[in-house]
Length: 148
Image 1 (cartoon, rainbow, N blue to C red):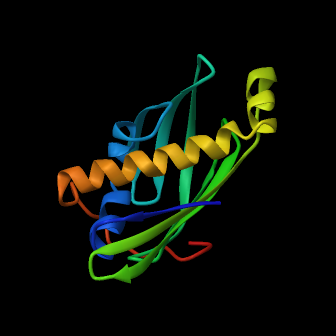
Image 2: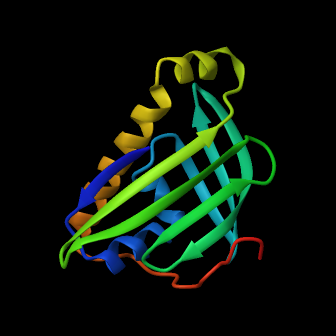
């Protein structure tokens, strides 16, 4: 699990995180994300020089609290990001991502902790991205209950 404090109000941080199509601007290896509907997204990623595509489902989402997902095909992964108000202008973001490495390059990378470093770097880029913007690029405040 990785965490970072972002110098922005809780709702602003959460709102930006729900803008999945902006992820390529701060997530390494993410080429494109297409929002299919409120709970489904299509990812195109390049890892270790190999491009892969997969679909994911938002399995739980509560405004200003958490976003959780799991892949529904392709690359096996799941995760949860939580948001915690520190004060009026500071929010702690924590991310836990679980994935099944495929192939030698990914298995070696996972063994030496490359994926944890990637999550930490992505959170740092998210912080810089949002703090530089000064406001979110959009928001989706819908609520998704587990099992919906």
